[in-house]
Length: 123
Image 1 (cartoon, rainbow, N blue to C red):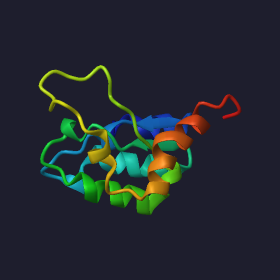
Image 2: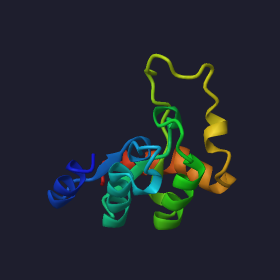
Image 3: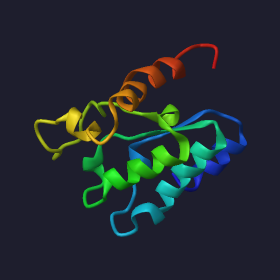
Image 4: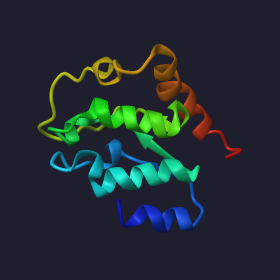
């Protein structure tokens, strides 16, 4: 992710970075993928999915999400179910638990409004 984000942004494409940028639990916010996600947000052509925290166990996803939210607001964050799910993930998944630290208005924006806008052909 870290190597591709600058190239894709230079090409002028809109970009969605999955899973918080796949941060390394040892590096947290300093993970190259997470830093690339922040660069994508800052470009105005990037969105970051704040879903599937089970893909990076040991990270403080609440803190990672708070930083993304403070950098770009809820308008550049997305949520997805990550289906089909990878083997060995927690069962059952509690999507509300993944989103509980966002306000009701931000949750609506992240789960519904942003996806609708991103999929509108005028983009």
